Length: 341
Ligand SMILES: [Zn+2]
Ligand SMILES: [Zn+2]
Image 1 (tube, helix red, strand yellow):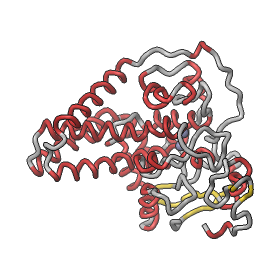
Image 2 (tube, protein in one colour; image 1 turned 90 degrees about the vertical axis):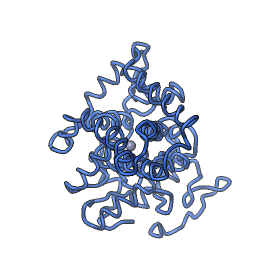
Image 3 (tube, rainbow, N blue to C red; image 1 turned 135 degrees about the vertical axis):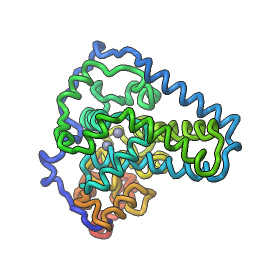
Image 4 (cartoon, rainbow, N blue to C red; image 1 turned 135 degrees about the horizontal axis):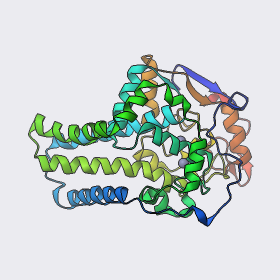
């Protein structure tokens, strides 16, 4: 665990975090049907087609430096989503000093996704109204809907209404968020498309078309890694912390998303910057945040108290928790000292 951490227990979280699942009953209604979002569909089809073309016919064409560059940029842009818009801005799991916020906003712009405010609002609704009609990525509508169908359709009146009720006032006073939101189309064009295509051409003479196609694949892979949390991360895996949540622990998704796939834990304890209590699991986002904490750019890193995790896992988990699970209905390590992990 990093320095600068704050151990948080249930009593401290009362009224502090608005993004745990609400008890409010959402009335299911057919009125919430949505039309198609043809602009999004056009972009999804175009970039997936370019990626498939590259994979089938040009995969061996790039120079070795271009592979390394795209691997780096995949992590760089993905980190903007995991550590930036998700763990910092959507959940406030830690605090960041201005230079780190600027870096995270640049990384997030490199992922080519929406404005920070748009992303945060959608994500807070997702947590608060998970698996109801007000959930933008409602997995009950099917695996493919949760993966990218939600992006190909317009938001329903209910999602728009619930979105307006979500508090995002904490973002209003951040000049970095405001700058990103105001200029996000230009930032996206430069950081998601122009820069990553130009660098291989300028520095080691890569072919323009190959550099462009490889970057299209990188962009699509980051998108699909994030989408996989809504699809695989809400359908395939275990629920060691809370079986009332559809979110699951999915290790391949954790690898694709740099540690975001421990999704049952994350929905149970959304304020925890680690998104998992297993500190030895694959979680490069947590490790990079720890590194920034060491040099003083990240601080107040929130973690759920081991007692709180134990209570939740034993009360409502599916028995598969490494420490607090059950074997044949009998709790394992029931008397284990919580301070050991
Ligand atoms: Zn989240
Ligand atoms: Zn989720």
